[in-house]
Image (cartoon, helix red, strand yellow):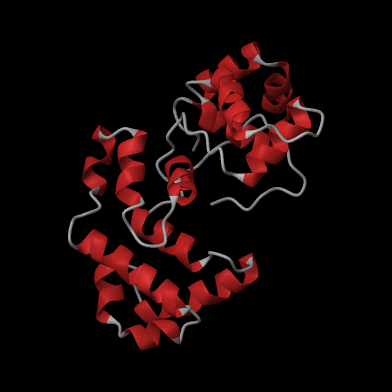
Length: 205
């Protein structure tokens, strides 16, 4: 189910930008959908770092099967050597365990996120080893469905803006940030439509 704000966001973008108007029409009826449990989503993001989608799926399958239920307590109950045997590098084992400890000890406060702005949640998430700003921004977009995230370091966003608005030239980061202001307060939605316009489509977080 689409977020409640999606129709208003799509209408706003259509009215302010002819490129967006064409994309909204082209991809009518589809949009962001939440990816579910916060811990599972973040753990998957760590497992999938710097490996192919196919490899990530295989490692995740073994990891989830070993745990039975992918939850912080389950991760912390399994010896690190057994987690590594699932195909995780030593560093990724450290990252997943650090994530699990943050959840188990209440340093990541999912219940309070509704009261926090985007930057506060990003600060909380990037306190976990292995989670940088880009991963936190993807989490805000795909899991929390925050409407106004603009991931400046995302290669897909950069490529789409370059193709649609700058005749193939890559805009500097500062220019990209300024350019995105036209889509506020729906920059997540604009980013999603720009991603969808790419061929091949980037992997969704």
